[in-house]
Length: 505
Image 1 (cartoon, rainbow, N blue to C red):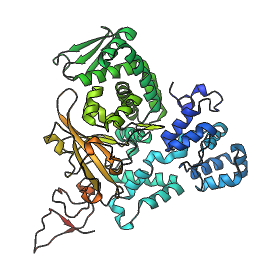
Image 2: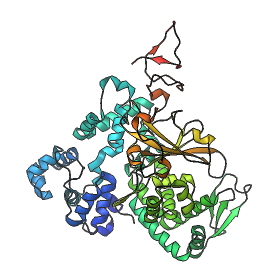
Image 3: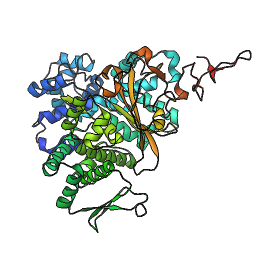
Image 4: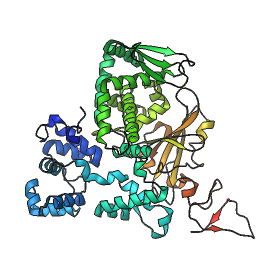
């Protein structure tokens, strides 16, 4: 069983809930609450995280009032002083790992409730909404948004709920795709236990065969009595993989590339050997919609398959050794550009972190069909339309190479940050259709990238882009197809500007 699934957040193996395995507990806290590696090492030694950034004063205050306790009574149960609890409740001190353990033990508290703001996308999610053009005249900056979130997280959640409903006519919380993506973002697209399980299985497979495809085939045959059969396109015109238990076969479409065949076999093996874990983890997310749960479970299955083909430690060592040279990594692990891009967004293991990439997949019409922010914190993906000035679209015309570009978003909550983006055209799985994959990394972290060599990382040389024309207020863009939403259009009968629309504030 994966950790934190028994009793909804603690495994049955934890017994009395006193940490029999502090490493798993602290890994969980790091994943959900952003605790640093240095704090983690302190926690392993002394259960202390005095410098942690986990501020959860309002959550503790609500818990204390719900239990009908004074600060003195609650502090006694937590084993801390009343003055220290007072500082925690006023967000003057962070919550240490030792206090979290006591909260779980004394009050049966799900630790995820300490970071309830993750449900709205945290500070990035709140900043994105407050950066809407309807609030432009208020001049709300990121620092003010952080103060709002820290002081009144429930009020911030209420604002987000109303904002989303007013913006879309429906409550986005119930959009299955959005709900699934938000849960992936809450985990920063890193599932430590899936990585560990996949790495152990990958080590077993390596002992039997060096070739991953052969090793997967052998495992399915010996452990599950399943043969592999590749069927013609006319037999499986719309199907990539089928499990035929009657014939004891895993059937694959002939149009799959070798990398896609390996991935489909890894998917099938993961479902057979760890399917219960995927289902339990998805059930623990407590989605209100069955479709969202299924989408999330499907993501976990794909995550495991990628982790099996690209085992964490071995993959990260290869990234560091090659300068994240993408074509080299594709060849070394026999994966596609899309599979590689997915994997690069997941490298957030405690004490062994990779670079925080984001990844998206865009079609020729500029629509996003995949979006994974990972640990990047970017808001570039929080839009339904992409910018024509972003070279993600140029990749369709240059399909044999990765295209590097430094971009910045002006007048948005991402303002002040530049991004190096790497785009590559890929065929749809099975061969019908094309997409453009884009990887992104904050420019200040991009020095090690092989594909960024020779690329200027300076802000003044970065290409300004927008989050789709309706959300972009750059006045001098000749690529603009629509005016900004809510803008006051200006018309001049004497002269005609070079841009298609003129508008005021």
